[in-house]
Image (cartoon, rainbow, N blue to C red; front, side):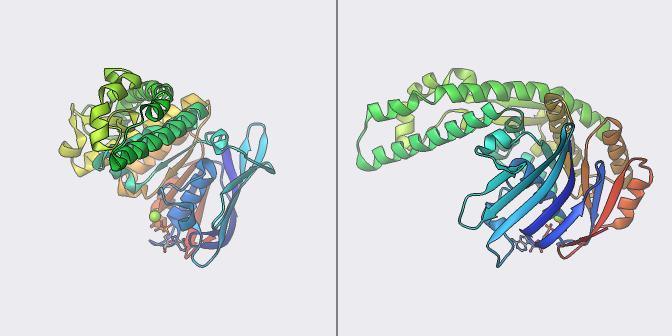
Length: 366
Ligand SMILES: Nc1ncnc2c1ncn2[C@@H]1O[C@H](COP(=O)(O)OP(=O)(O)O)[C@@H](O)[C@H]1O
Ligand SMILES: [Mg+2]
């Protein structure tokens, strides 16, 4: 599976640009602020129906315009699949696949798997557990539409439950029946999330360690550990046990919404002990493990978006990495960099098909 063409209309700093892509390696060069990351984000949106940055759709519309539209042709073994993503300001976004509007996005997400490796990945280590849940959710949502369904269901119920707890506190009231009607529905999706996250982390760990060994010159052992309140019992039990506490704090204090993925180097939390260089290798290995896991689950290679990869690795290591990725029958790769010469050095040793694009102020040329 790969993208053969891309068209951006009123997307971020692009007014209208269309170009054809290499099935293997696409390099985008240009100065900072010209729109390199925005191209990768357009690809991300076409695959996952949302921006990599987590920004709301309205911020993706070019300033002063009232819609954006992305068009792409994905090439699958069975033939071309044209996809259109449109977002008119103030309305719902819509995805059209092969001329038909997709009625549930969760059925679409995962058909064209994608992994983005970006400078803001450092949030995975430095920020709170939310980023790491997002990492797990992002992967599992692409693997299983059931997972995404359970996640949405759980999050909706959690919101309702917290609103109810707040309302009880404000009105100094308590309605057991109302609360129980929510509590009864939560354990099933919670258990499904728990089980799949557990499975995910177990599958990720050996890949993660292996990639770290390949990328890093050092010999630390890296690992990931899944932690969850649900290790102490199912959600039904937890909700009962914590009822008093939840009422006082006016929120649900235990459940999969508090899950975390502990990230370790030689058994210690990486946030506190890793050097800058180790941290970069660590994050890269984590993303590549995610990529490899998705590839195995899907049976084909996801699209790989490498944003500002030279921030993480020197030129030789990037060449080695690209060689490794392409050599292992990896799929289509997009790379951005400010320096054209570095891109040219990378592709010089690459015998497959490639294209180098020059980006200046929202305009793309070959
Ligand atoms: N909604 C928007 N409308 C117009 N311009 C935007 C919008 N969102 C982002 N931009 C512009 O896009 C540019 C950044 O593009 P980006 O792809 O991040 O550049 P880089 O080449 O450094 O990766 C900035 O100049 C920013 O102002
Ligand atoms: Mg950028």
